[in-house]
Length: 249
Ligand code: ADP
Ligand code: MG
Image (tube, rainbow, N blue to C red; front, side, top):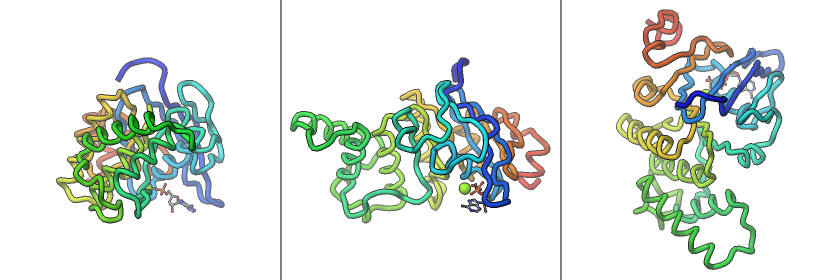
C-alpha cells in the first residue's frame, strides 16, 4: 500500500433501523492499493457498512469520500462511475444466459454501450471477455448457462463481471460464503492476485480467519456497530481484547 490520500474515507458513518443502531459512527480510511479485511461477529454491522459505502443503503449520518470527493448519498450506478465495484452475498448472474453472455453483458453495461456498438467493437469486447474468463479459470465453462455451473464457479463469474467495470475500489461481502475450504482459498488467492496486478483496493468481509490473515494488509474489527480494533494481521492476532471478543478465546 502506498502512503497518500486515502481512496476511501468514511467518517462517522451511522445507520439506524428504526431505533436500532446498526452502525454507531464508523471511521475507516483505505489507502489506494491496500487489501483490508472487515471482520467481526454476526450482527456487528459489516454488511450494513458495505451497503452504505456501496450506495445500497442510505447513511443516517456521516460522510463518505472517494478520492477526496464527497459521495455520500450517491446511487450505486453513480458510484460505479467513480470507480467503485461490489459483489453481493447472493449471486446476481443472469441464470438463463451463458457464462460468456453474462460477462459480455457486464462489459456492455460497464462501458455504457447502447445499440450503437459496431461489430469491430463488439469483437474486441468479446476477446476481452474471453481473456478474463481465462484469467478467472472458467473459460472452459463459457457456453454453459450460469444456472448450470457450480457455486464456486459462479463466484468466479461474478468476480469477472465486477472486474469488467474496471473498479479501483472493490467491496466484497463474504465472497466465499458457502464454499469449501480449498475453493475458498483458491478464490481469494485469485482475488488477491488480480487486485495486486490491477492496483485495486479491496475491502472484504470474510469469516475464514486463515483467509483473512493470508490476504489482508490490514484488518478492521467491528463489534456492535463500531470499529473495535484496527491494525496489521500481527497486531490484530496479538490483541487480547480482539481475542476475547471476536475469536472467543
Ligand atoms: P453483519 O454483516 O456484521 O453480520 P449486519 O450489518 O448484517 O451485520 O447487521 C447489523 C445489525 O443490523 C444486525 O443486528 C441486523 O439484524 C440489523 N439489520 C441489518 N439490516 C437490517 C434491516 N434491513 N432492518 C432491520 N435491522 C437490520
Ligand atoms: Mg453480513
